[in-house]
Each structure stands twice: as structure tokens, then as C-alpha cells.
Amino acid sequence: QGSPIATVNPYTGERVREFQALSAQDVERAIDAAHGSFPDWRARSTADRGALVQRAGRLMRERKEELARLLTLEVGKLIDSSRAEVDLASDILTFYGEHGPELLEERPLPVPEGTAVLVNEPLGVLLGVMPWNFPLYQVARFAGPNLVLGNTILLKHASSCPQSALALEQLFTDAGVPTGVYTNLFVRGRDVGKIIDDSRVQGASLTGSERAGVSLGEIAGRNVKKSVLELGGSDPFVVLDGHNLERTVYAAFLGRMGNTGQCCVAAKRFIALADVYDAFLAGLRDRMSEVQPGDPADPATTLGPLSSEAAAELLMEQVRDAVDKGATVVLGGGRPDLPGAFVAPTVLTDVTPDMRAYREELFGPVATVYRVEDEDEAVALANTSPYGLGGAVFAADPERARGVADRLEAGMVWINHPTASRPELPFGGIKRSGYGRELGDAGIVEFANRKLVRYV
Ligand code: NDP
Image 1: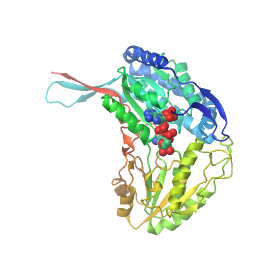
Image 2: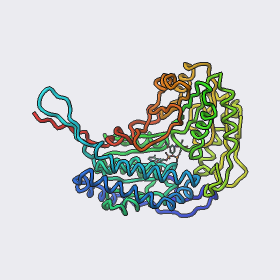
Image 3: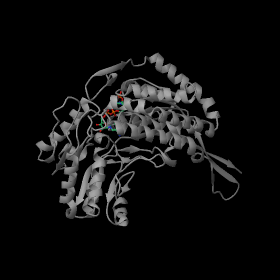
Image 4: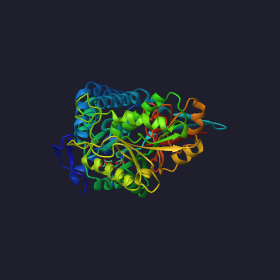
């Protein structure tokens, strides 16, 4: 059960390297080391831990080229996007290394007499379960803030990016993080539950599919342990008028095609008001038709493969289901005649509630475009999704856009910009996109014991 832990180049299909899953005894030893290292780690100051995390950020930047090549090899990311991911992950580590201590400072509470303070203390050993779509960024946003807080980390990465997982562990080791404080675990999905059951583990954070999140949340819940879930989305991208249309179309293109569409906050459902619908649709179709599939390691390539053949097939099933039920294919709809896990850039209209594409996450270069008469209809359609991660609203008047943003069921809404992630801003969703936040002042205390100390 579970995927083999292996690097398979999604551009060539070649199995490059395989790794053995840890034995039960090895897992036991890793939990013990993480637990054993906690008292010393928590006893250090946040500034001391922050300095090590900053050093990890610096080392990551020094290793940029090597890490970027690894990402492109393991998950098929365009090489420039891989470099950008190294920069973002490094910025996150640097930001929390530097600002984490002040975000974690104790805070006085207003009380009628005497003094009360809220102190942020670490919980202990945490399990991180991370996906392959941003192998470095996903780990940085979980591990960076939590290491500064003083938690110790067991990291189960996606089975498809084992070398990235090892490179991260090496990075923290080389930065001087003590043994046991950050440990990579090569384990299968079925073994994750046993780790959460272990009384030495205090909490778990997962980014990935709804299926995996439901399983982890259920196990954490029955153990009365804190969990954070980030389970993807089907973000609306709402276009209210034709103001600066060329820029809006470009934002739509970037929002959908970034990371070959494999992004939890990718713009997935484009909702345009009737006045601008035709021009927006034509613009997006033209822009998406320009991409050139090829070797993701070649900087001239503008469309990489999906992360695996299975991912490409899943996306094609979703497209075929829509087409069989009457969706209109405005662009693409198939797979380019190339080896590798490619899906052609695709634009679908006339997508209806009986289709999988209407309610499921489309994790690849497939856009669905909807026409609506007014803002109310745009909001109602946007909110039909079971997901509630991000969203974007485009309009000449930012206050008009804000009115729509306030009505979207989402954890994050960007105005006149595709939804994105920045080191200092909180990230997370509602509904079936999960719960809790990563990053920002909200994210850094998700796994803190927010302890009250009252002096009377
Ligand atoms: P998964 O959810 O299977 O993978 C994410 C992580 O969860 C991996 O480390 C995986 O390990 C682990 N995992 C899988 N099953 C369990 C389980 N039962 N308990 C605990 N951990 C588990 O995603 P897939 O790769 O299968 O992608 C499927 C879909 O998920 C995508 O098409 C997309 O819709 C969504 N997704 C969303 C992401 C996001 O950023 N929100 C990221 C990735 C996927 P292993 O690799 O060993 O199976």
C-alpha cells in the first residue's frame, strides 16, 4: 500500500532513484530522538533558534542551483519556477528566523487589577505531512515558524520527492540544528496514523488532498491532538469589468498556469460579468494557447509536464467527464503528442453542476470560465464550491472589488492580483479546504501552547 518512495522524472518517465521505507524500529528511534531533543531545544531562546533558522535560509540560497535542479527533476517544475521556489522558501526561513522572536513575544492582557500575560510556549514533537507541488516552500512554511517557536519536527514528505526531502534535512543539519530537532521520515501513508497515535507526538500538519486530510484529521481528533489542514481549493477569479483587461488576462494566465496549474491557490474557476465575458475568454484562450511544452530544465520551455503520469490521467478523466456531459472545449482538451506527463492547456465553458470539473479541484492547466449577469450571481457561483481557500477579484474600483471579496467564502482574497503566498502573510482556508493557518502571526502560534500566566 502507498506509493514507492522514488524519484521518477515526469518528463522522461525514468525511475532515477528509489529509497526504502523506514522499519517500525527506525520510526520508533526517530520519534524518540525528536522527543529527547525537545527539552534542550525549548530551553534555548527564540533568538538563538531564530539564528539557526536564518542560517538555514542563507544556506538554501547558496544551494539554489542544486536545489532548483532537484525540484525540476523530481516534480517537473519549469527551471525558472524552481529557482523562484528556492527564493521564496529561503525568504520564509529568513523572515521567521528574524521576525519570529518578536511575533512570539508574550503579550499583556487587559485585566481590572494585577497582571496577566499570554505566553507562547512550544508543544513538543510535531509531524508534518507535505506534498510534492512545492517541495521546499511547503516544508519551509511549516518548519521555519515551528522551529523558532521551539517545537521539534518529524517530516513525512511526498513519496515522489525523496531527494528534495533529504536535501532539506541536510540543510537544517548543516545550519547547526541539533540532531533530533528536524528529522526526515521515509514512511508510507499507512504508517502516518501510528505516528500520530504515539503519545510523544503533540500535533500534525498536512498539506495535500482532501482524502489524506480527512484521514489525518480523524486520527488527530481521536487522539485529542491539534491539527492544521491545508487541502487545496477551487479558487474563483472574479472579473467585474473590462478595466485594464490585458493585465487582468495576464493575471488570469499566471494564476492558472503557475506551477503548471498544480497550486492549491491557483485560479481555477474564472467568473466574468456578461459585459467583459467574451473579451476575457478570448484573451485567456489566446494567452494559454501560446505555451510551448518541452523539457522543464530548458529555460525556453513554457509548459512543463505534470508531476506524474497518474496526475495527468486524473486531470484528463475530469476533462473527459465534463466534455461527455456537454462542456464546450474552447482550447485544448487532450494531451500533447509527447512522452511525459503533459496535459495541453485547456479552457472549458458550459460547465454545469453535474460535472466533476464544477466541484472538484482541477490540479493542472485546465481553466473553467463562467458567464454571470451581476455581482450577486458571481458571488453565489463562487460560493457553490465545497472549497474555500483563496480567491481574486478584479475591478477598476478597489472598493467595489472589496464588496465582493467580503462576500466570498475563502480564507484569502487578493484584489487585482492572482492569489499568492508571501512570507509575512497568513495562508489557509475554510470549508473543505481545511482549517488553521500557516505563516503570519496566526500561523506561527498554531502549535503553541498559548499559556496564561496571571499575577494577582
Ligand atoms: P496526497 O494528499 O496523497 O499527498 C500529500 C501528502 O499526504 C503526501 O506526503 C502523501 O504521502 C500523504 N498522504 C497520502 N495519504 C495519506 C494518508 N492517508 N494519511 C496521511 N498522509 C497521507 O496528494 P496526491 O499526491 O495524491 O494528489 C492528489 C490531489 O490532491 C491533487 O490532484 C490535488 O487535487 C490535491 N493536492 C493538493 C495539494 C495542495 O497544495 N493543497 C498538494 C498536493 C495535492 P505519499 O506521497 O507517500 O502518498
